[in-house]
Image (cartoon, rainbow, N blue to C red):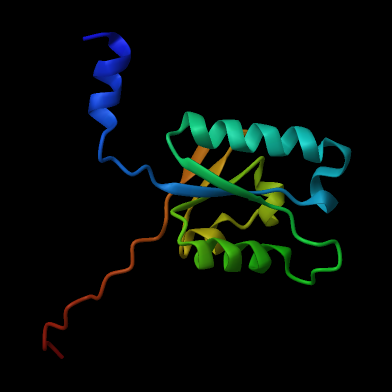
Length: 123
């Protein structure tokens, strides 16, 4: 058995979590194509199945909400951005529903775990 066959046998039946990238032209400017490439590469290196790069239209009043809507509609596990400026330095907004990965610096912002707190009946 070759090394490639061994690697393939360990990944059979494994579905990698899916991610979209999010690149804002108003934030990245002329670096937007480079940022988009870095985002896609970073997602793949982290083991995500990279699905799409979200680039909101310039006239969108809420570009972050636009990206969150697309990610939710596609059932994504994570959103990958170049830096926190892409999400207006508000990682918590994304982490309500998704993991957030940043390229620069390479950081994972984990999804908020919401669970019901059991009532104790104590007053």
